[in-house]
Amino acid sequence: MRCLLVNPVSNGSLLARHLIARGVACDALIEVDKVARMSGVSEARRSEFDATLYQRIYTSADEVPLSPDAGYDAVLAGSENGVGMADVLAARMGLPGNDPDTSRNRIDKGHMQRALSAAGLRAASTTRVARTDDALAAVDRVGGFPVVLKPAAAAGSQDVMLCHTEADLRRAWAAAPWGAFTTTWNDTLACVLQRYLEGPEYCVDLVAQAGQYRVAAVSRYVRCSDLGNWSRPFVKAYRIPCPVTTQAVQDLVRYAKACARALAVQEGPLHLEAILTPQGPVMLEVGARLHGTQMPLIFQQTYRHALLDQIFEASFRREDAPPDAVFILPTVQRYTLSARPGQFDGIPKPVADQLERLATLVAFVPNLPEGAAFARTEDLFTVPMQSYFVGNDLAQIWRDIAAHQHLTHALFHEDPTPDATLAEIASLHHGLIHAQDARSPQAVSL
Image (cartoon, rainbow, N blue to C red):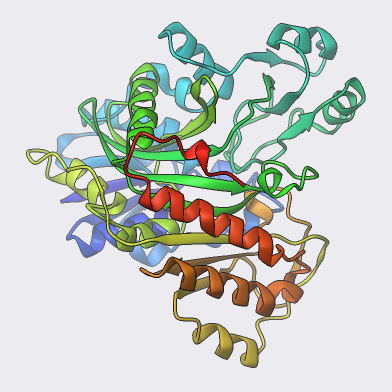
């Protein structure tokens, strides 16, 4: 078995390691002309590529052999940066993949919403805008304030700005990265303006095989806005995976599958982020590739038939369709959020020793090396550390999260979440895990 991973510059190493462990030989395409344009935050992403994992490394799509003699069984996007090219190469090789003519539906946020509307699905009121457009006229097109301005092709909540007033919008318009080369390797030739949606945010991970979808995970995000912090409303503070069998989650899953069909996703992993509005779920965006860096490993403990296993089965054992994931163990991902810039001088040994003694803490992963400067957290790319908690005892998980926060908050200038608020999130977690009736997850809220 052989796989070509396209632009595995972030989570591609995780996927390659899993496939290699399952007996798949992996090659990589790295489009070096685009890598050369990466700067700033993307320098950290560049260092995530592990060349030792790959038997062959191509530096241009023109180098990739397209004949059957190349021996590839699958072409997979190694990151958001590889989605479009993976579609192209799979089609050229005659391998299962997604139609390149529909790639923009899975890359561009404006095209995504247009495809949902065309399919008769709930969609966010969205309009495409250019720097020279009339900002207030665009607000009228989406139904008025509050609105969200964001690049049409980006990821990780980067440069996403919430505007409640005309003054907010004018500031956001001036600060938007018009013309910039994003971390997803797209020129910001346009942004989208979108009506702000009220409600909790969920993420549904699916794996597609020949247009059929298996559920790999469903997670509830706790955002800063849920915690009352509206200075960075879209930044995630926690991710809480859920069972996939409750009625409310199944309603969300049905909507997610309908969205995947509307976006022409036929093959491979995808994750859809949606707001659960009073009218039902509304998709914000889709990522047609493996979701996350460390979280897929935690999903291996959270679910039976987990995301990485499903990708292997769907890509290399196509005669046996992978089953839906089965929830087996509660987990929480905690994002450390810096309140102001600083320098990371490492985790002192006494702190590391105490962290190691926390019963449910299975990993804490700084996203920058010792001695590196960090910025105030504004998006996923400026989160200085992520930590993962796993265990059957929910109360112990949240005691450990409180202890973890106490031990680490000074390292990254984090504003600690009050214990009373942590107790409310723990109650939300309990409701998500144990709700076995038709009650909506909105019934348990922060």
